[in-house]
Length: 113
Length: 112
Image (cartoon, rainbow over all chains, first blue to last red; front, side, top):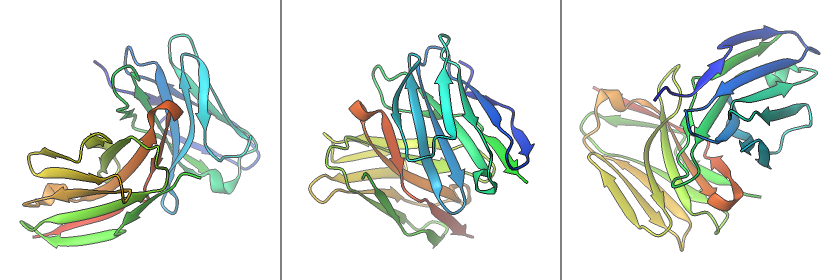
């Protein structure tokens, strides 16, 4: 099976703009989670979707939102970008049927200038 | 709230020696504990995991132990090799909560 894919891989934006990141899970996986990775804060949980429903979310402001489509692909949106949003955004997929194992995508490196 | 503490933040060991990374979690309902390895510029990769109904699990040179009473779990790497150099993350999750909390990571360096 093909692994988790994320697009774009790199993105440069300026403060105040918004951005949409995309994640395609492993075929058959219905759970998609999003994480923000920064050198100082490690891996921070953003939210998790399963069958188009957000089941849990982390402690991030409302500027961070997401959704999941019927084919399990997920998008994450960040509005009114701030310098501190510069990070590697990782998504992970899981089948959630027999295991909690998550498989990570390569990430999208977002730079906010 | 849920929290996972990981120690040490950096670890340097001689090639061939063992390395141990320790984590503690706060939520006693946690029942799944994966460990991920992230090499520079790459995605985190699952290397081993353990569930709350098991005290120890081993896979070749890697082992994980879990002490539910103390809410501690540890990663043990024996006979370390240069390719073990990476950042290692522990994590804890509650399956019903669909949320995984990661530790802050340990940068492991293997000295030749």
